[in-house]
Amino acid sequence: MRIAKRIGIMSSMGSMILWVILILFNPYTHERAENDVIISTLFSLFIPACLAWLASIIQKPSLMFIAFFWSLPISLYMTMTPSVFKWFGVTSIMYLISGILIIRGIRSRLKRIN
Image: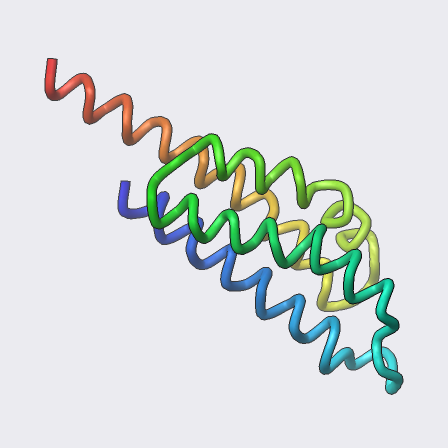
């Protein structure tokens, strides 16, 4: 159960850091990010990362799966770019792995109780 929590927290924090780099310190452009880019990536990358972080803390696999499916389309897009932002795909997959491990941990705990 601990490993699931760690994976979820690390991947969500990684996504949040990557989002900040994308918006504020993008090494591939010297211009400020446009408002529509900020808003769309906020809702498709940053908020799912916050949800994944919360899911890791309270050990709710359903929230982790929601964060995974929510961030998956843009994460797949970012994975195909030749930049540091391909790591968004890795963090999204880690949401899925963390959710699966949370379920396995819950099931093993229930088996020990019965």
